[in-house]
Length: 453
Image (cartoon, rainbow, N blue to C red):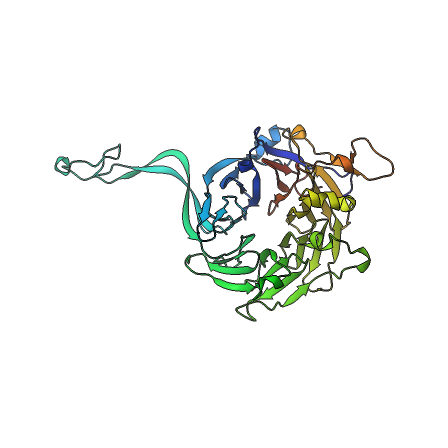
């Protein structure tokens, strides 16, 4: 998967002309089948996109092989509103921090969304029939005069225009003192975890008034605080295992069978620091911003400021793979610290076969790495090349040597255009990229069985 590898094509692009802070996308998540894609923004809104089904004959007539339906807006709803904590005199933003889909059990879909303090469970369902022939109501819904009813009739269901209903089913509040950074649905389908800076709680999906604290790293004296929790996730297959990352760059694997309170980890994953490369920024850039289990459950993918790393659960000495995302920024850390970019939290994702990883960068760039060859490719999500079915071109940051046409100089990078949030379809080579207030969906249309390059 080199720089000249064939690139994915644009499936669909959702662009907004006027950028406001509330429109900035803050999370992206496919459901388990990949037919639905949910985004949350800083304005507390959730937008769900549905994949349109296409007949095979239509794709062949269009001259495309392996083409599939595009994603169109399915439903939009306000998930969270701004709130105020009167006890602490703090404003609580409506920004959606995370969205997680629950495994589908029936025709309806369920998803969890969270802001800094409150997790909500939503039911998304369709209705294409409406009842008619009420005995006590007329067709407008008004109550009839009982004295005028001379006979009884059986109400019937009549077809009507498709309506998508989104209703709140549960509100999980008052469980966190600090800001929630992660939620993760357990493989048992009945529980989920929510993590803030110092604690991780486990909830039952049917119980809203209490949760179980499973990790608490808050010291008796806050002056002794040396690290915070940055992300947490359940194992995809074993309901008793979960992992959480810290600002010190460590990962802790916990087993709930060993203890109800998992303050003592089962395994600690950390990379020994090279004393020769230590600098003022070492602790900041080593902080893990995201952690994801592989689909197989054997590996962990983490992202810190400059690198993405793959860890084997059976080897806690250090990462088995390290990928340089934008090593050319190491000389720019001072200016990145001054403009606060050094604290940006980039996410990372696996493809469906765990053979390729993806993460974001600046200048609307995102990076993909082939684990078999170790080679990476840089792609760009920006409006000028967002025409449907256009082929993405690889990009390169010029750091020295022979400069090629189209190379971007390090000093020319736009640090306001950052790719922080992304998602990979659970079964196909379709990726969703959030770039500020724009959502890009890319798909490998040339060969659906090939890996996205």
